[in-house]
Amino acid sequence: MSLRSSRVVQGINVTGTAFQAVVPVGATTGPIAVTTPAGTVTSVTDFIVDLAVVPVPVDISPQTCPNLLNAKAGGFLRVAILGTGEFNATDVNPISLELIGVPPLRFSLQDVATPLPSNGNDECTDAGPDGFTDMTLRFEAQAVIQAIEASLGRPVSDGESIILPLTGELFDGTLIAGEDVVSIKRKGK
Amino acid sequence: MKIPLLGVVALVACLFCSSVSYAQPVISGFSPASGEVGILVTIAGTGLLNTTAVTFNGVPSVVQGRPGY
Image 1 (cartoon, rainbow over the protein chains, first blue to last red):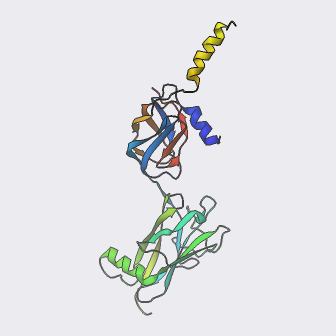
Image 2 (tube, rainbow over the protein chains, first blue to last red; image 1 turned 180 degrees about the vertical axis):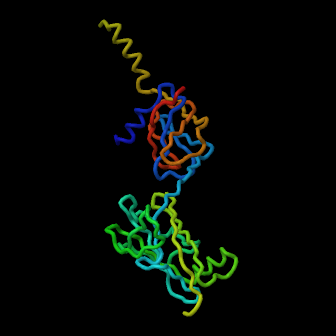
Image 3 (cartoon, rainbow over the protein chains, first blue to last red; image 1 turned 60 degrees about the horizontal axis):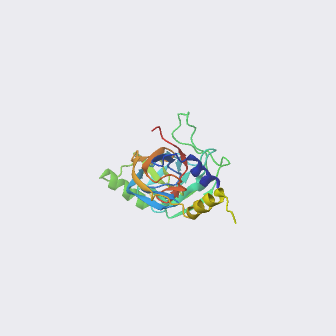
């Protein structure tokens, strides 16, 4: 008997009319099922799991300041989800990620940057590896520009700063979100 | 041959010992209707005695104990 099943049996009340159970890690919205020696019963209605969004450190253009995004050029925009002592970037499900609604073209795991200190006043850092594995992503730059302009409802302007949200999930279904700022460059190539 | 009374009682009792019946479990409701991972949900119904497993959308849970009623 596993520890989990033994704890289940131990916790049942004596009347058989009610008990309490913990919403387990990894649970998603759906029915509750209870099994006894007489069979399994499933609830008619779903239990709705409110998924809390976990903030994660995001660094656009790691090791570079400012984070320039050329509105006229092609190529890629590099973005990193930064691992820390409390957050393991390898837990991130890469196919769930979107930068302002744009999915990444590719991803890799490597230590590339250090998060901004939470008590600092800096808005950008070019600090390199910190000993924690990061998830690096490549987005098509023009797809990101188009998503920004669709969001703004107008063309981007030279020199303006835009906050780009990165959203996704961990492999266990936990929602994550982070953001960083890009500085738009429209002049030249 | 004289059969002890206690033996007769045990024999009759054993006619039922292999056919212990349990009431079919019924879930009448649960509370709260929604919440985050880690919260306690009270599941009410009948026939819940001897519950061996509880799942939330197929994910195994841990029963913490009886509620306050």
